[in-house]
Amino acid sequence: MTQDQAHQAFLVLNAGSSSLKAALYGPEGEDPLVSGQVERIGPEGALKLRTAAGEILPPPEGADLTSHAGAFAAVIASLRAAWPDLRLAAIGHRVVHGGAAYTAPVRLDAQVMEDLAKLSPFAPLHQPHNLAGVRLAMEAFPEAPQIACFDTAFHRGQPFVNDTFAIPHRYYEKGVRRYGFHGLSYDYVTGELERLAPHLMSGRVVVAHLGNGASMCAIYRGRSVASSMGFSALDGLPMGTRCGQVDPGVLLYMLDQEKLDTAQIRQILYNESGLLGLSGGLSNDMRTLEAADTPEAHRAIDYFVFRIQRELGAMAAVMGGVDALVFCGGIGENSRMVRRRICERLGWMGIEIDHGLNARSATIISSEFARTTVMIVPTKEELVIARAARAAAQGVAGASSAGEATSAP
Ligand code: ADP
Image (cartoon, rainbow, N blue to C red):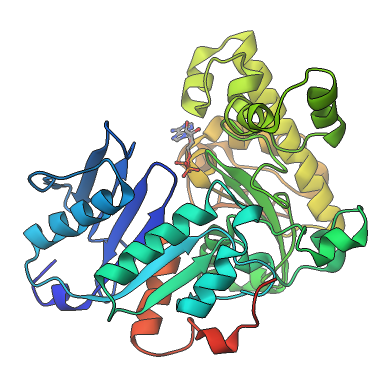
């Protein structure tokens, strides 16, 4: 970054329970100038920031990585050491939950913070940490516009039947709804499809975001009409360590018969399930499972593929067919084996991939005469946030003020 760019820089923050991810963008461009994180905030905290040229930014002397405040200060000090003239024109925050009301990026102020804090019970593992990160940034840079971008926003226009559960309707009124997540990724991929294959924007697209977290979204005419994730980030597909769809009766069994408490059940569903649980504790990482070639690893991959195929069939039924299937996320972008396995036996849907193109991870991997286009679009969730921050700094649409959003439930 030149010192000129340093006057118009945009910071993207994603504050989690034990990590603080950060990316710095200039006024233009798709890729961050610097990105990285403080991981394992606590006694073993480590700061890793890397420039676009691959240079590692050294941690500042005496950095205290035992708290989020210390981690944030260390990130800023490290950026300032590299660019003494650094001026942040705006800061964009990833906020997992925007509830029913926030359907677009929003400029953060006291009222919005109050609304968002009320959503913490809906995402207790993420929302309070996201908001703590916002507070730190607001204190340190009171002049810079602070913009929240939500993982839920992309899905908010979904039809009622996809938004609800068949439990007493009062829960829906209280906000127990199917919010869907990974919305920043779907937003980015939709924008890319508009650029790469605009004709698909008038059609029926299924995007499979397959990473450590995994979900799928049915996009009809550019809008989300169904998603595999629901009320929490647990529902739908199996993930690295999260269970995906599970019969609620199983939870009652754990409570009533095994006498587990909610903390124990949370631990099982979030941290011990998914690929890790299915593979008997072998790994949550697809690369390791692919390399292992054991019955345990096959079991995990088989279930992963089965659930994705099943969800794809359901989403095609919801939209009356499918014109394109798009892969993204670490597994979707890189695992030719998983893509091949998913697309096998889907000829009836017009899905047929070209194995050469799939092996090369080309942008379009469907065979020339296939009815349904199959694509790989590497996702850039941070860029969606950086764009919203840039828009806010210019005072243009893309980040409405609090007054323009109705208050969250
Ligand atoms: P997150 O949801 O944490 O952002 P990623 O999108 O980075 O996760 O995805 C991580 C997953 O992608 C891991 O399961 C990893 O094994 C898988 N992955 C990354 N590269 C490859 C590869 N070359 N082949 C197979 N799987 C891969």
